[in-house]
Image 1 (cartoon, rainbow, N blue to C red):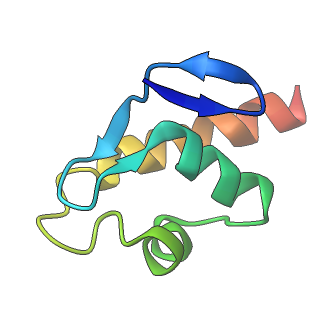
Image 2 (image 1 turned 45 degrees about the vertical axis):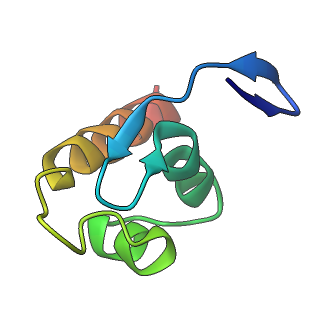
Amino acid sequence: MLFSLRGPFLAMYVCVCRAVTENEVHDCIAAGAKSARQIRDTTGAGGDCASCVRKICAILKRSEELATA
């Protein structure tokens, strides 16, 4: 179990190759990342087998929808 300022939680991995969690992706988006490439450059997610790129794009899209709602 991981701990953060938000309390204990179970980490959901977006990228198994680089052990990047959903929270790390959300942190990148909060810091200004607007594309899967920017998230890859920051975390490494999507840089190996790239099977996580769809999930990263879905997270980005959902974040954009929430920001405009």
